[in-house]
Image (cartoon, rainbow, N blue to C red; front, side):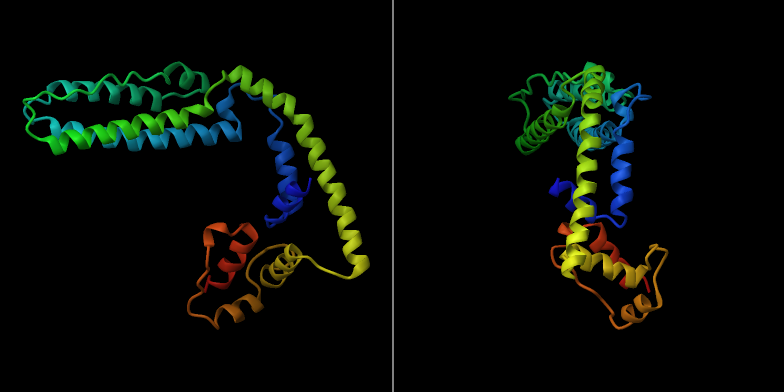
Length: 239
């Protein structure tokens, strides 16, 4: 419950984010797992990764195309590239399941091959591709039907957890007001009230005044910042 509460406080509109979570868990009208927000992300992430691997393998094919003794390795990589393209072009979750068993074959180089450096590079790229694609495909272990069934069963639990989180939030706010204290997340949101207004409509006069005091703002460990913190940084650096 506390984890859900803390996650919500990392967003500009905590209540709105929780409502969105409930809405996102409703999958009654979804026909394919790729249509859910999680499935869509996984599909797009896989397609982008595959495109990078296809490009890398194609570069190897082009480099080895005219090299002596590279005919079989090139043919093998061309076959691998074709399978990866088929997987990349999958439109549904089950199409990914059907096409995910890539036959990479055995990459063997002829003794006639004089370019040992190119051979090692081709091996490294092919092996990295195989390892990376297999890792990405771990998320596609069950059929779309099974994934949707599992998500449907978890929907009630999501609603219940968020309901408990809201109850905790209401009671927590009541206790803080009684003791006249604020926690760190409260301070961040109060800061946003000053810089973006209570309705988060845009930079306030105060935000512009403070922002003009600085030429640059350096943020340490920016990758660990949340949405609220990022909004604070952004509003102070817009002008």
